[in-house]
Length: 359
Ligand SMILES: *Cc1c(COP(=O)(O)O)cnc(C)c1O
Image 1 (spheres, rainbow, N blue to C red):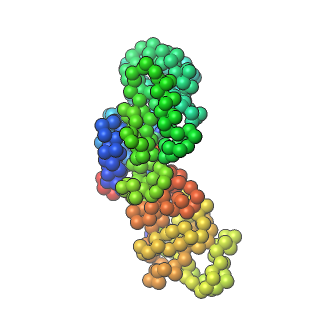
Image 2: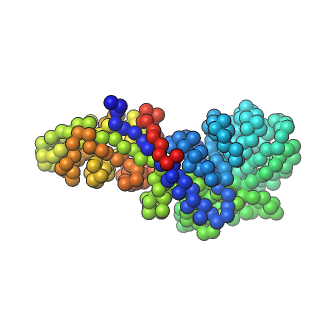
Image 3: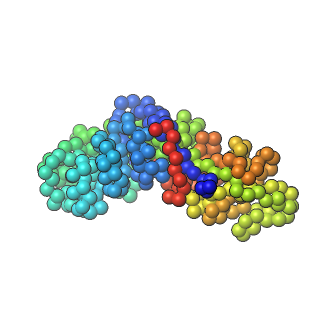
């Protein structure tokens, strides 16, 4: 029998979340963000789930090639642009839109001598200080881009540091203002909104939006995905592979972190940090056993998790376990473990078999 751990990807949940982004956007076009193997959900699963998107956006050039080979014909945006000249060549051949965020990338484009039309996005650093041209350097960068032969669409993009926090010192409004000033006089389409801006800014800014995490059913900030009307696109399921009768005063697992305060049953689950479950999860982290909420008891080990079975007297070896998914929000597990849903879904390990439903 195979190890009982598996992930299920819910393609219909992706469709539903994309539709929610579409309703929030009210007419803007959508680049569905599928970097990092579609946040761990599988690139080709996401291609199905986001078939109605206007484009897909990612970082990885091998992923972009795979999308084209698999028949994706709509726009593909490379969010960090080209890393070298070969990437520029591939972008021209496969009609990938490149972000241009740095002088070095401008130079590569000027040397590329394209023979067919292509699209670009100029990235403006509006205060996050990660990628992009400073506002005062935008006019000259734009002039150089416009001088490139065969340039088709040109979009200006920036990224929010605090899209969920209007009170932040670097607020979305201050970044909007900076963006507007950098592009004064220029009538170019723009793209600013990630998931947080798509969910929480009114109106949602820009001509294209770039939602990622919300399309997978998790929250980009406050609250859990389902409270925001989102449907979880990944469920992680396993089973109990052993049960221990632990006596009061005995400890469980590495470092003897959990000590039983009374006689109790502890279940052992086939799933550990080598599967992508966060080792930082403390005692008390929620886990569903036979559909009933239980709590972690003892440190996460490489291949196993231990759980307090007190709430579920009927639990047996073989009982079904949900680590996260439709009945336990990945955001809640992430919060307990001191991280974010993004990190959990992206960390799902290759050794976990993936099933797809809703295709
Ligand atoms: C990852 C990414 C996004 C999507 O962000 P979410 O918070 O997942 O919605 C949007 N834009 C850029 C440039 C990104 O790198």
